Image (spheres, rainbow, N blue to C red):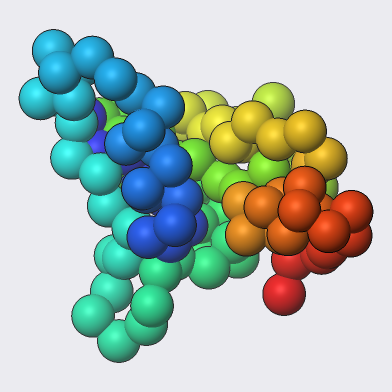
Length: 104
């Protein structure tokens, strides 16, 4: 199963969340589908989820928690990372430490 994530920060968190080695051995975690950018943008992954159903039969896409898009109507497996404040992971950490933050 390919697990497609937005960036390396999300990939590291996902590795911590999924603790079972048995599950991990069936997953290939991908945080960069192209060689010319750092991470996968939300818009790129959203287009992939909308238009590449056949390609994603053995894959899931996991978005940052700050995604406002309703993901319920997709035929592909798309999910959001859990969050206390509905922010991306980086802003979630800043918000927790300082009481404020937003995704950049």
